[in-house]
Picture 1 (cartoon, rainbow, N blue to C red):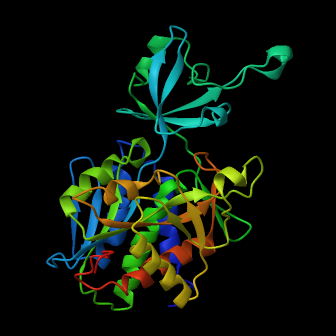
Picture 2 (picture 1 turned 30 degrees about the vertical axis):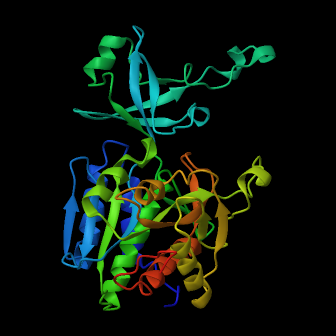
Picture 3 (picture 1 turned 90 degrees about the vertical axis):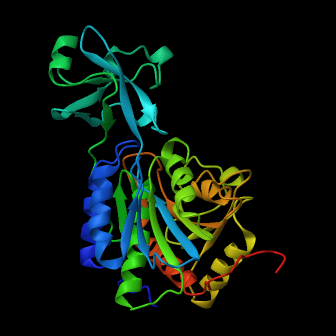
Length: 362
């Protein structure tokens, strides 16, 4: 399968709508509905769970089960404290970056709808330059234009309201996709595109395929921990993002060398089952799909870890999409990398046979 025009106008429109929709950890369901609606023509049925993970299933009656997985949630904030003067202090919901907060617009999600606000910051004229204080979790704050706490609460804002950034999808220089939450709604997009291509190419898989869009990855792989016990797969291919380490202020000796535009990134880690990883690499070489390698130390930090160590051990591997500026509102990926991750997952699935254990002792 050629990577030419894998992403169609229709699929790009879906990707844009899916990214622009807010889907913070613990509140993923509206994004999941968009994803399921797009996936519906390409699967036989759906599984959903109590916390919002969604799974499109092809061949649900098959005994041998393969998962391809991404996660649907994005980092966000919670309202933590409202001062008498109407200033809002926050805590993280996931790995939100306090240093990028000042001067950002925010959406506060309330039962009355979205309340707009801004992360304020003291003007440069008012700060003591001899002892500049950087943005920290205990000094960043949101201003909704209210004169006091009573007025804030009248807007529907209360402790526990979730807060997201409104930044939307754009294409930079013709082939770079830029948005917040590409980590990891790009994963949900890519696995949905695999399902679309299987359907359009009339591929009849000899096993059950579970296209899994997990929730709550950003706070500890929780959605994957739950759904793997429900599916009980034989093998799992996870897709997430990893760092482009070629931008300023990143030490390649610590982070390795991976970059956008150079292909999918295949990980080496204890949780990555070696024989399944080698199958992926052999597929990439056979199909002339460019790829990069990345080594993790103890854990991948992705849903791979949750799948691998579940159900007595599930053969699991990780294919990552290189990304610039993770956990900011301008996350950036290369279109060709997105298409090549889709190709690599698709082509690897075609090599898997029911009954494969990927055991070292066969």
